[in-house]
Image 1 (cartoon, rainbow, N blue to C red):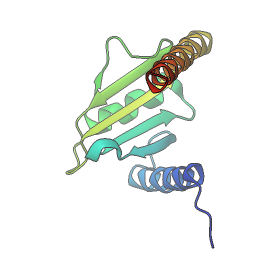
Image 2: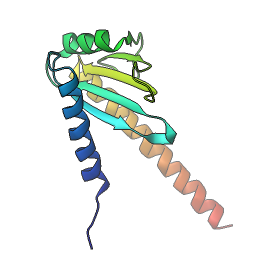
Image 3: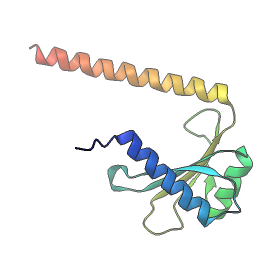
Image 4: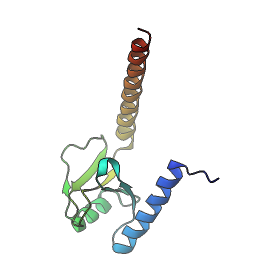
Length: 130
């Protein structure tokens, strides 16, 4: 019996989407692309591999995206919009401009997630013991 690992499947999908997007626009800087199919919507996400802000701006111009004034993550530049392609709900391209700020923000987000998960587990354990 074969074992299908989610992370391996996601990586394979990302490689395929990256290859497809690179072939669509070979003159644009390379990006690492992912496709998110969560909650019945399609989100295409591109992270600049090299070229930073200029790479993101080039892709954003090509896709008709708008810069996000206050990105969710500190230390990033993000462009966002609805796809020019049919049946793709959202496209986002971004890059990290300040690694230290990005890492701090990410660490805080992870810590908040862990605290929330622990609180839920504690509440669940309290409810089960009644």
